Length: 484
Length: 137
Image 1 (cartoon, chains in turn orange, purple):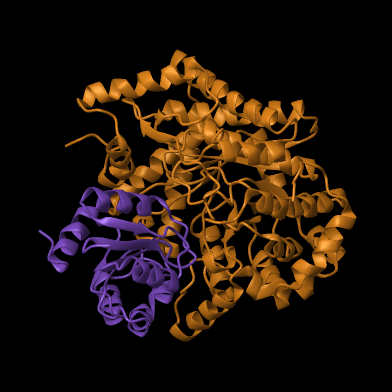
Image 2: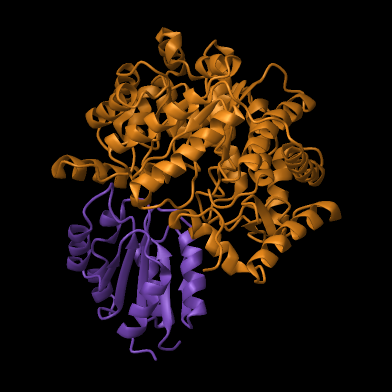
């Protein structure tokens, strides 16, 4: 099966739909595709994700959004209402449990039953497919702000059908960003194809007057991901989605911890994505950005965790990201209580409000960082299109095979795993080994120089140990993993 | 394979790959022969890998909170497969949410795990324990 970046016909979508809806009993509730569109139109504009994001972008506001999801419907509604009222969340999620993400609805059902009998959630998220259309609509109707589906699902077709018909107005993920960090054995051909279905479905909603926002998952593995890597994936997914008729996109990036690099990353993500969408013929697209607070290991101490959260909040505000996804003081322990989740939100809200009128001035350092990210990202993107003989879908598949794009620490066997990231002496993420990324000598020398500076400062040879030290560093109270 | 063969992996529908890589590296550096079955590993895959390689221990990681459901019955399955005496460790964010550690630990010990580790444990600690449990050095 060769997958190309070509808009699907409605016939192709409709002929597949039957099969997808039959994969779990709740699928039959959404057979009438236009009923979902009618329901979406009945919702107030205040519940539309895309509209709220564009308003925020125009007004220089950074919106705050948590992650949240539990096994049972009433408890999930209670959680979202709490985060809206006590956490002052501008945008809400429904984070989907990990069994549903792997299409293991039978196991999700068991988790629901055990959660009922034990009186606590045994699932790490909300099993939307099992709960079905009416229950999902109850979730959307129970809150006053837009709700997004957040997950990590390689094949999210049924989940999309149910949640979009239920009034969710934003859908996270993509054929690359929900494969490489979230699967071990699923080919990119398959996931890009699965996500073309989702994007075409959203394109159909758009053609019928319902704007659904799409958000490729920016942070990927969340572990020392250089900006050029996540930018490349985000931009390719934006192009793939745009081809299927998606008009509103939020592109994401996970905090690295060095302020200049993080601000440069958000700014270049906005600039490069607009450039590449236009260059590829996708006009009238609206790009917003999302900044993810630190995605790696957190300190156990809640006071220290608030420090990490605050730094992410400050960076998001100074970078003028359209929204920020918030961590909680329980991060080191796993899923937070609703109280801890609301604390993370309020901490973040305080920071973004305080910094709303400030921005990071364009210093030489910021200009240089932006220039370097653009050079690196363009080198990878342009090579992808070349090896794809002009087709982005074919190109990204071949590029992963060849290591032209390479995500550090990804579980997928379809990822080369040859690059090795580490922090430089200022805490910015560089590459100790650039693997087979299509970089010229200037870029490679830049990374070598930056890593060598740190090696000299620490009087050690850069090695995998340095990478491990960096991974543990924030949990231990530092940004750069220095030797003791 | 010898006395130092161990199986590592991340159980269930969990895709957290970073700690898994670090454990692989750290145990290998410490002289163990690591058979790493990676993420999204079922109980059957752990057991099969242990049987095929004659491993002396199975180290189960779980970061996403479903560990309680995923790990249940592993000891019994080991017994049924003829490796009932194998050493079983579990570690990570084993349950959903911030819970008191002692009851969680008790729960996993009752399930038949020899040792259980809370979030934030460094590899060195488990390496020291495993060397003691296997009478190495």
